Image (cartoon, each protein chain N blue to C red):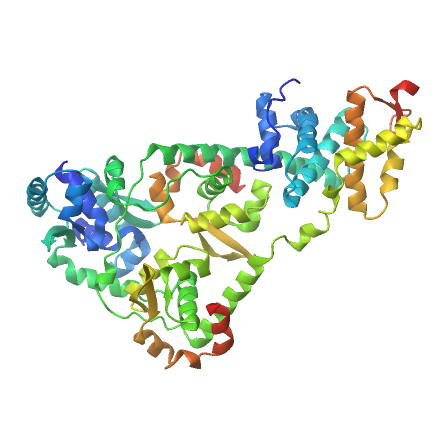
Length: 170
Length: 170
Length: 249
């Protein structure tokens, strides 16, 4: 398998992306070999004139446009409503971004207030989505559209991620 | 505007592509200039290692993967498609089954979340299809293949149909 | 202690923890039991002037207030007995503020990212260009039935406005601090003295409500002591506290 074959697949997969595990299965190669191929692809694309870069987040690889095209593209493509987030909406997305997917109960406990309202609004704005249940409480997570909106596709690239994540997870 | 800026926009436009007229209008340049820019982009991309080429058809430009990758792409698609439907996809088909054809707006309102993602996936798996529009919102319905898969000829044969249908329609 | 410039509307703070963190930061303190005891008075001042009557929110503020009063009491009377569960409440409040501080800092980063306009864009998947039906063997009419029922039950649950858990304690905020102050003032001005233990007994009924009223009364009395209307005496080290009007001392 070549780097360009891999790029063709990732191109077709679009913003849904494709997991490294699925790629390894489809091409019948070892996970390790797959990872090194993906690394090679990242190198090739990043140093080329292509207007996008591959991003690997949580074992899923996808192509997104380079940040320098952001203003230009926003003229022709509207994704999420970028009107300012309210204080409680901002707290909620921050919690999910730095802590990871969390149940309603965890969110309420961490914020010290009931979060029904900001959850509803963020669901409708397409910034968060339901992702199953744990102990009878709905789990919420940020959407791909949200990450693309803030221009950070991999959470670990958020400012101060390591420090804030550790505080919030323990 | 540079060739690569143009490529970024066409990339984001996906398989639907973008019309030359829309491009010219968004960037406030002459049609002629736009056409020569598109020609330049075709040259640059065709001679590069990119796994796709720009295609202009009926005044719409889009990026399509090079023919030599077709076999590979179908093979990968088949591997991926064994995956079971996610919870939100299941919820969506269940609602359509018991409620009947519904607009995107109805679906979003019922589920309380934006359903772009599950709709996309279900469309590509051939489980739902578009069936016109109502008040500017696309109507979705389950496909014949779907009903055959679950072995139900008529929705009213679904268990407890009458009662649940009434709940969902009101 | 003259930094009282913030306005008293509920909208300024997303909740009691946000208010506490703001008070601590405005005094350039770090998060600790000591700094919590220092900002207690301002926190209570805020509650007494709160204009919201969102019962849920008031309950949440009062629950934090009760822990703060405990902290304050312990800082004033070191010998005060604190139960294990109260000790845990104090530790939890400190931790909660620290966690909240991280969330708030993360929120600031995200706000900057949104404002910077560095969005990236993906491309819709091309898979659907290839029309093939891809079944999922797990789907049966029973699965559909189950999913619709889960959906129906979920929507029903979401329609209930206030959880029944909070229902039992929301009765409390219906008595305003000012009413209690009035009641205490009446007793004191008629020349009598008041003991803290009498006050809590006078509320009777539910232990939790009794505790809450005692806290509110204690706050009211502290406020009066601060304003020089009332004099407080504690005769023995761990004894009851007796309040007398200043003019009778």
